[in-house]
Length: 447
Image (cartoon, rainbow, N blue to C red; front, top):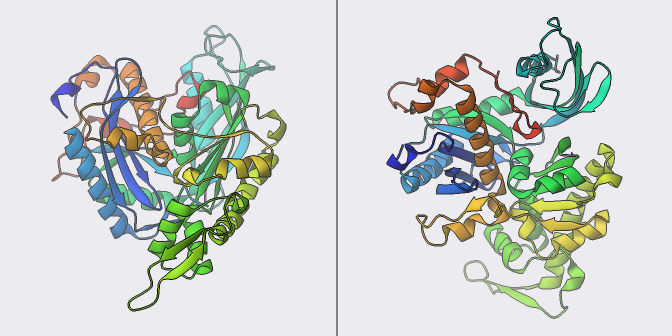
């Protein structure tokens, strides 16, 4: 760790690792004195081994993680050993379940241990073969048949019940992500669902309270998370994203994939009617061939068809969640795909809900030490997931710092490349210490 990290115990240095379909991104940061997130370093690498959010080539993914972590580590002067990793993919499923415990100690108040027990019980649910629980998110609690309690700690009661939002994924997909991280000589502290991370970086508490849909349009997947009354109500992963649009352009306009990507970024639009008939883009031909002329309006028709399909999928998830009429804050789109021109208008047209683009700026503190242009680059929706993973990791570490004895707080985790054993944090994690915060956002799923 760098010397400046002998800092206040409340601001541990944390790393978020976003293993996406188009890029692998490692962001190192901590909480600054004014409560914002101070990014110390960022590393990016091309992601060649991930398809639609799922690892398809271990070696290429490990290589990408190595590159990203090395750049972020040298930029921040931090020895990176433990990371918070995002998970997405079509295999992600969510379900609602109800849990109940009867307390024997009638004299004492309901405490954290009781809620821990309730959450631990949820992890023992029998899942379909090949599936594993990733997150257990408590919603409302019921104490002695009194419903709608958000925080039962300190109350008296015998019968404690809760509704849970349970998120599960394929065991093989989860193991492959963990394997890639371990092969890159790192430890994964937490596996965090990517739409949960993105929501942490781009949504305000007011929006979550009012009712909002987060739509994170990545390269391979589009992640959806629906919040109402400050609680997550529905999650889904749609297996289409920006790469689907690029492939459509490649086929529809008969151009190379890299040219299709450039056309999408520079001239793409989600509404064909917003483009003039006579606008033409000239694309260089292949070796010795004539340049190719492409109509910007035709390009927009190709993009609009695919984006309409993605938005229709999102709208289906909104309707099936049952919260369609309760979304006062409408829709927030983020991720690399949110930068497409006129997408906000298309979303509003298809769903009838208000829409804005979510930028991870309100949580960021300006850091002059970063290379020129890095802070501006971080404000792009592309980094919403990476910054969200960083925020989630910081919240977790801060809570552990509160819950762990003082001598543990001061110990610095060091990674020894020769021994696969990690430091103190590893031993704590292996002892299956579980924590839960008062706030619903800070769920815990360490087992």
